[in-house]
Image (tube, rainbow, N blue to C red; front, side, top):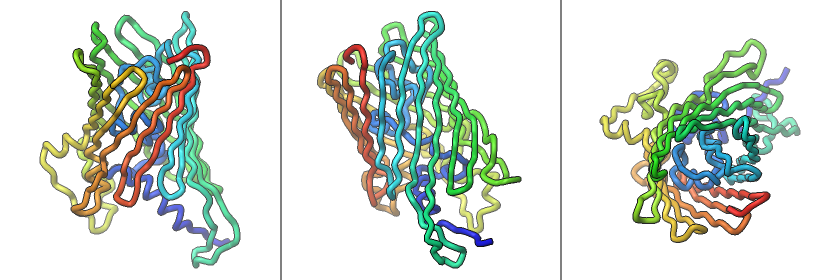
Length: 342
């Protein structure tokens, strides 16, 4: 029976895994991609933003799901790399006696690929690759404490190989009495594969990500500041998993100062609000900059920017985020409030 190899497909996966040094060590790595144009503009990872109208926020922290998000419909689209595109759609509903619920679906489409034998001979067939995660989100609150959870069944399809998985997110948020400051803690992607890609295959790890974040709105200026600490479950983000280093021939362990190690965990973001209906955003992700810069020419890698517009029942967000000197990703988010204006 002919064996197949998919060099083009593997190349696309390296682009996806290149998001960080720790990329490529887990299955279902697409779970770590940012769908929200707002979050992308703020560095790609923020869990403590205090906004009861943005349905994008529960994707990153289920405790952010608020009653005010009821009857909102959200659609995100991301033009990624090498013909890869992904997105997210969601809808929210609240029940006074139970709490807040939202349903969503996150997908990534890797495109079409030509099938070939191990000798490079084309068979004339094509195949597709895609992954899907369904989101069932619940939240509630006790006084100023908000808590939530998100259950995420996963389907991953690469040609004829399929895998099912089940993970969950858990989050809490506490806002100050003045509501100018919000602190959050989240554990994302807690779970595992249920079935492997082939019979008797090894079970792979999922991208567990424990995060802590804080956001602050300045009292006398229209500015929101946000800081997020990511991958708190793993200290060394500059080197591959220690359990896998022995399997990599020629591996050279990188030595970094304590300050640089701390910076790899931190994502900065800021919003300027010239008016209630127009927002300017910018962010900085040191980890992304260090892992994806080209030699001594980092360019704008790790930096991101964008804006948001609110027009009656519509909310439009845009972001541009540079992953490499070769190109950037453009993200679009559109939210619609069925009953009222934002």
